Length: 186
Image (cartoon, rainbow, N blue to C red):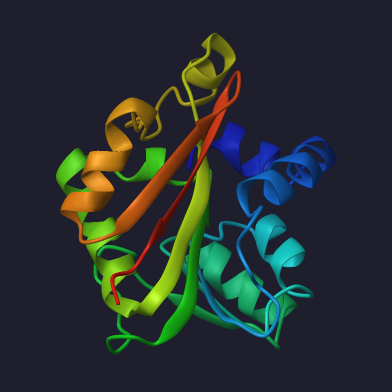
């Protein structure tokens, strides 16, 4: 992430935005009592929100510094520095996999598709893959200067999730964001 991201993703403004985004993104997703895997936790604002709601929580973060800081700050969360396109967990390890506003940081469509496949692999049959990401906007584009920004098109996401092995994909959009949910096949 570039310096703009590092500052914004730790800000009160971002935390305030998440109080609206996360309940919307996880509506109809049972978290209570579930083994939840969060992909791309960043500095952990989303992890903070998930922690009291999940049965158990594991966070995978690609950035070494963010993973280390999160592990030190939240010792009751299993935090792993790893790549979400190559998860080090056995098949069917989790009930729910989530990712929030991080897919656009995965540099290519094939890598995003690999992340979807890995989410499906580690989900138990009938498990839920859910999350959200941003849509293009001028300030969003400026915030990504010198950073990875490979936006996911919400119109083409459902077929991509089906290709990755999921069933019943659902995509909903808002002005500058979208949410998605899909089910791992039984």
